[in-house]
Image (cartoon, rainbow over all chains, first blue to last red; front, side, top):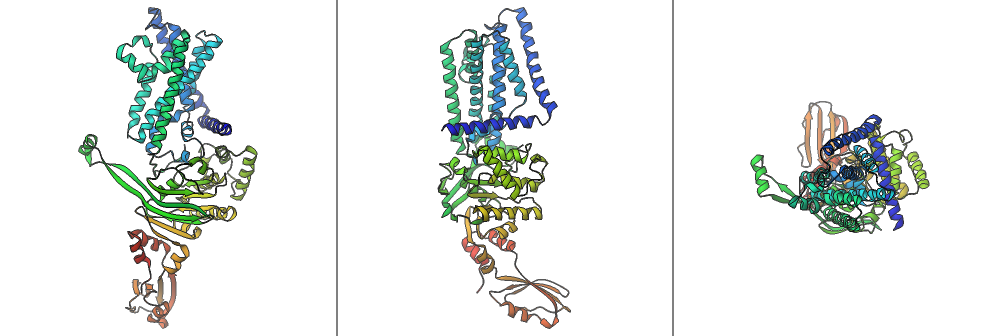
Amino acid sequence: MLTAVKNQTRVCLLSLKYNIMREMVNKVTFLMNIIFMMLNNACILIQWFILFRLREEIGGYTMREIMMLWGLTAASFGLSHILFARVFSLPELIVSGKLDSYLVQPKNVLLGVLTSATAVSAIGDFLYGVALLLFCGLAVGGFLLALLLIVTGTVILTAFALLFGSLAFWFVRVEILGNQMVMGIVSFATYPDGIFQGISRFLLYFIIPVGMAVYHPVHILAEFDAGRLFTVLGYACLLSTAAVAVFYRGLRRYSSSSLMEARM
Amino acid sequence: MQAIRVEALTKTFRVRRKEKGMRGSIKAILRPQTEEIRAVHGVSFGVEEGEMLAFIGPNGAGKSTTIKMLTGILYPDGGRVEVLGIDPTKKRRQLAYQIGTVFGQKEQLWTHLTPYDNFRFFGAIYDIPDEEMEHRIGELAERFELHEFINTPVRNLSLGQRIRCEIVASLIHRPKVLFLDEPTIGLDPVVKEQIRNLIRQMNREYNTTIFLTSHDVGDIEKLCKRIIIVNDGQIVLDDSMEHLKYHYLHKKIVEVKMQEETALPQVAGITVLKQKGSHARLEVDTGAVEIGDALRQINVENMEDINISNVPLENIIMEIYRAKDRQQVKAAIAPVG
């Protein structure tokens, strides 16, 4: 069992290494993608600095919490796209029958698929997010907690994309809905949760899991709350279990295809 | 011992049906209609260890669907499959350690990496230790002459070199059964021959069972001793190549060049395919008339040149493809009389 986990981890890491090597074929594009993504994110933060010169608090957040919010969002989004970028194009893979090569390998199909691509600009997102959290003035323990919350955020975002992406086994053109839901998480995750009330707040905590991926973690970092932490950990486990179950249930319906293709 | 055992294998796909035009699209949203396509229907066969089998059929006959069910890519709707005693639907991963697959139309290699790096990746997938991996890469590179381009990125290789690497990548874990789906598609005759030699070599040296699908008659004729033809999701012929070629091949093509234009015989069993001046092309059905008798019917003294050949295997296969079931296949290829 332990050897199997070790071997699977070795393949996943090798896959990540080769993905990055593919992106590094053009050094200039590779570096530009990362640097410009960091600058792009930094520009948006400037707007918040201006807003906080006018008001001391927005939606219950100060500038420090906004930095945590942006840090966690960017780092979770980044890590998810570095390690599991393929989950965001899963419907295309299912519909065009591109899972074949993973199904003939003696390894976990899902991990093989998810780790088969890396979005290079996501490295910029991740670095930016981690840097921002470093500037929040967290203690060592707080920073380690932030790293754990980046992992839970990554798991929630990936599992949510997997859940919606796997619906492509049953429905056609589901990628539009899936993309909108995933982008919904990212869009809402850049605003303080205090500005959302009533039904929208309910939606953000229970339907689009931005509350679990980012809002709860921000509150945990601002003021440690073990209850919230266990809620987030429990939700991440529950959602990922459900997403994996739906994927494997759907895989039985996979119909492959005879399209010509190359592994690019 | 049988390497592959298939019993009453069935697979049906449900596909959406849409009427033409915008109205059809709107109708499809309001009242979606689906249709069941029977891709494989009650297919049964067995393949012995070390056998080289051609599994062929026209496009849409169910060949690839069958291969995909044998390799664990698709779940069958009914029937039973066992490859090396393993059920692909239940123990896909365990089976994957023992089989290799090459899909000519789908690349498994990373194009930005060199064949060497790709082989290392496949080695990791099959849990082969680094040292052993180096040994196997060296051995395969030597055997299949990859040294010239083993360190060139795959995207810069020619199609032939690339397919050779695909096959080598599928052999890295020394599979007992190799599934080849159109391995020579798009290759020139020289490279095709190289690939065929490679497959033959593997079968000879490692006793690898070969399950081949191809539209190239050369692949089938030169590699396989047994042929299964599927059409419309069913097996319409399961026979040895020798039997097919020599027992069913009852028609001969006789090409003659006469000294001057002559009237050709109007005898049962002899069909004039083409006649132009002193040149003629005849088809002789040896079931109806013996070849010696047929030649005697042609004015031998007036003959300048003669060439007798078999009907190309391609034509026989085409006839079989046109037949709808086993009965029609028998009628299409069985000798007359």
